Length: 223
Picture 1 (cartoon, rainbow, N blue to C red):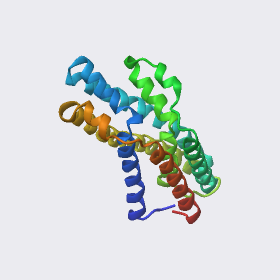
Picture 2 (cartoon, one colour):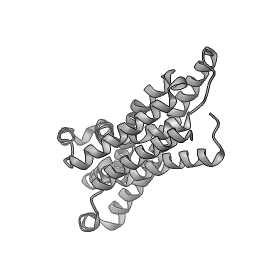
Picture 3 (tube, rainbow, N blue to C red):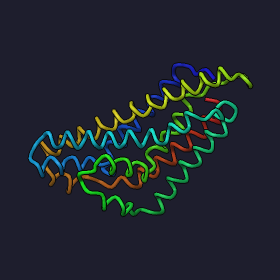
Picture 4 (cartoon, rainbow, N blue to C red):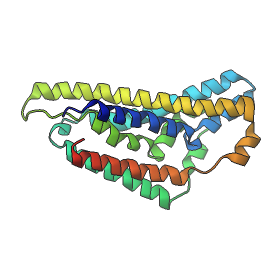
């Protein structure tokens, strides 16, 4: 399935915007980077924490996307998989709207294990699931039935696309979260955070529902 330039631009734009949105959300960990910098009174400590959060987030994105990249069923069942992925993302959004409590196990992970914390936080909040409908749209290709060479080529392309989507998304997430962390650490201070920040839980859950609905719509319409 060949997409026009505007469709591909929109899909990659969604990858970047979702990454920036994840970065802004404090649930993805940038307050921990600020805390690390303040506790050690060093810029390097904050940068190290941001890098650890980025690594964990990237691993979580790959853990979700790579299994889809290896599925030859993408060839014959692409629309059904995209619709199913959209429904799964919507279900996650509805669950988070109903259950507002943050996973308790995240509080038991020590600050020294930020990579693990970031990985589990992204998985628990459905951050990787948000990318699945977008990713499946990016790698949508029609291939003649029984063409095994084409199937192998598709899997290779999908694998590369999975890494690229995860990397671009994580870069946008790290940039957005890093800018906020640096601004609060160097200029605004924790008082600004406590007085002005707002809860993004409802917006997060709603965005999952919207992305899932968009994924279903684009799959059904053949985009």
